[in-house]
Amino acid sequence: MRSRDRNPARRLRRAVEALPRRTREGMIRGIDSNRIVVGAYVDRDSGGICPMLAAHRNGGRTSIGSFARAWDDYTGAKRPRRATRREVRTLRSLLETRLSGDDLTDLGSIAEAAAQIRSERAAIAEREALAGDSVELATPIQPDESLIRVRRRPDTGERHRAHELRDRLNWSWMRPARRYEEYRDLLAAAEEQLAEQRSAALSRPAARPAG
Image 1: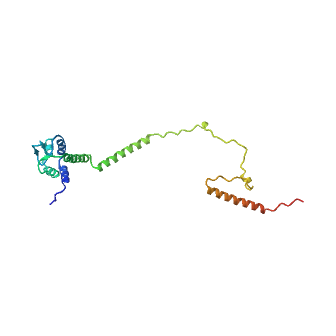
Image 2: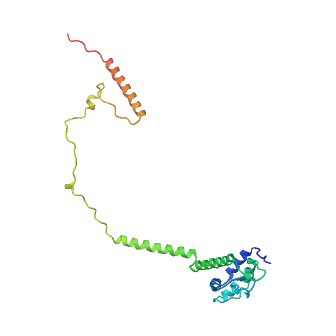
Image 3: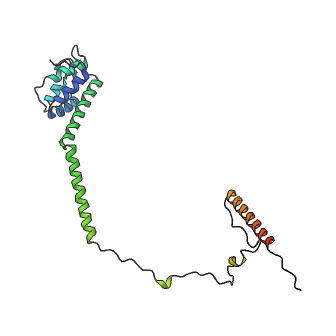
């Protein structure tokens, strides 16, 4: 035997889900236009009616009786009374949520929607490919050579004398350095080169005087 759910709110939600769509729609219209009561079908003192009777009067007649029991259990009704605003608001929320779920179901499954999107994208890609084949490539514009001016440096008569003066002592400056470490290495290399040049100059034999 199936055990009874002890959560009144959950039982009310399941009872709402079991109602036909037309009954849920009629119940929403009924609770908006009537005084809603709990614990009775009709309350003569307040002039109110239960949600199921409100649905019947608004085109949502049904023979499902589990909703009335779930409604009274949720509200804890011991005697007929008017439903509180919170109780009516909860019932309306359950009805609207279920109707929204029905609308999503009517649109089809997610797999069908994904398949339709893929088909549409493939059709668009095919059309774009056909349109691209029919478009001729534009001829690139060639620049006018008469408008191109080449700026040349004027001849100053100077020539590069590094090959000629490379053995001459102190003939050139060091190249500029961006960091101190680089400058230190260049300075050490220059000092070493200077020492080699001086050593080579001292090792050369002195020229003999003519006589």
